[in-house]
Image (cartoon, rainbow, N blue to C red; front, top):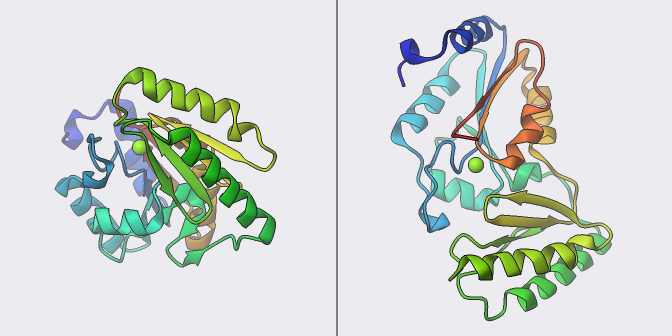
Length: 229
Ligand SMILES: [Mg+2]
C-alpha cells in the first residue's frame, strides 16, 4: 500500500507521529510481518517489511522492534532480521538482551508439570504440536488432522492445566500458551518504550495477544490492526 492509499485519518496520525523526538516502531511477527502459513516453521517475513524495519532502525532517534509470541531463538532464526531491529520473544518474557525473568524452583517445577500434562493431552492427536519455550509451553492446533481434534485438545487444555494456580494463559489463533511467568505484549511494549526513552510509539499487530499492546497506546501513539475483524 502506498502512502497515498492510506485513509486520511491514519495519514494525519502518522505525519504527527513522525514529528515526535524519539520514535519506537514495534510490530508483531506472524500475520503482520510474515504471512500465516500452514507450517509455522516456514513463516518468512515479506521482503518489503524487512526493508521497512531496517530503514526505520537506521533513522536518527528511531528504534524498531518485533514483539512476538514465538521463542526468541525461533524468531531470530526465522525472521533473519538485521541486528539493528530489536527482537522480543515469548510475548515479552525473552528480550534479546537476555531472559528477563529468571525462573525460581517453583516456576521450573510448574513448567515441567504443564509440559507433562500437555504431552498427555496431545498424545495421539494427529497434527497437534507442542512448543516448549523457556517459561511457557504453546499448544498449536493449526495443523491438527481435523477441526474436531483441534477443538477437543483446546477444550482439554482449557479445563485442565489452564485452571492450575500460577498458570498464565494466552490464547491466539489456533494456539493456546501456558506460561509460568506473567508476560504480555503490552508489558513488553512498555519496557521497550522505557529502555529507548521513546516519546511516541506505533504498534502493528493482527491477533488477540496484540490487543494488550494496543491497550497501552495513548496520546500521539498509533496502533495498526492488520487484517479483517
Ligand atoms: Mg500475529
